[in-house]
Image: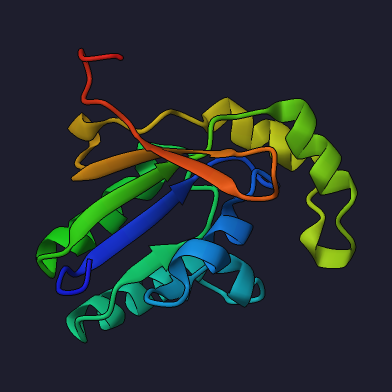
Length: 160
């Protein structure tokens, strides 16, 4: 990835491991943009998009660490990547509702999301596809040893 400008989009429920994955796997060479960092902003979407455009214009790779449950959230990000000539990579965290609710319940303070928020995200959550505009897609799961297993998702119609 050394010379490739990349926009990575994390997609999954709250407490699915996205932020941990982000910090372990992407934060060293990507600017992390998350609406959680500016919860009190008047227009968080506008601010997120400004940061994404500024970073890509400066030729910095970006990772968007939000739930990003549907094309409504992906489309403006994918368009920003296209404008700046960046590759768009989606990281899909398949839903495991009981585990996400357990991990969320263990959170403290503002990082804990009301359960209704997790259920609302689940209702909107859709598996990303190449036809959505992604250049690469990966499925991310816990590996059972404190890390992650990351596997490429096959193009639609060619399931392993």
